[in-house]
Image 1 (cartoon, helix red, strand yellow):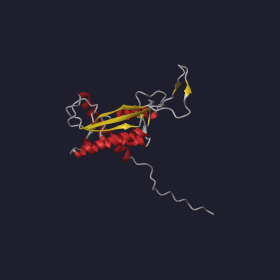
Image 2 (cartoon, one colour; image 1 turned 90 degrees about the vertical axis):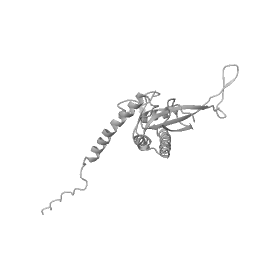
Image 3 (spheres, one colour; image 1 turned 120 degrees about the horizontal axis):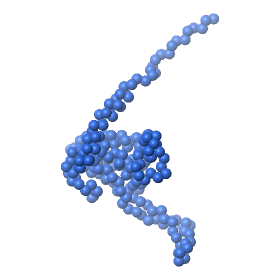
Image 4 (spheres, one colour; image 1 turned 180 degrees about the vertical axis):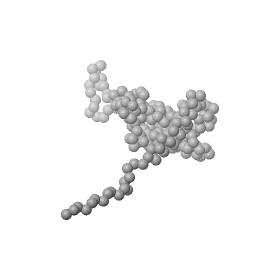
Length: 207
């Protein structure tokens, strides 16, 4: 299959899925969210979206979409169906990398995109036709089926086919990863209220 990554593909492991019955706009938003992330970090993000615990930022195609306080008042939502599809493609890419002797846990998503592939025209069912006003012909209500495809490519961030901007984005994620782990470790180390503390014994009531 020909991928839309038009640079040097050496050292990059690809995976794709096509003819998907899903919104390519939602798929593109999910791909944007995990682009340049570590594979393990991307899996965590996709799992949180699938469980509707984390919204995805929509920088476009967000008309009439509600704002989310988790995104600082910006528009977004949690497309669980599309997150499941992207996760399946990512797991496949990691399996391809492992079969080639690479370490997928140490790789980053250097290429992620979603596009519309095929539009299947569908006619309205019986009884939904209506008379038109032009040349005596009847107009037909159509609901077209749009199919999409997803492409993912993972690498170590130092491949020759990557631009300087791509390499810098991967380096930024590498620097941000230890800070995120430290914050998570500090939150886990905080002690909450002692649930096992024994309640004070009440004094005997004097008669």
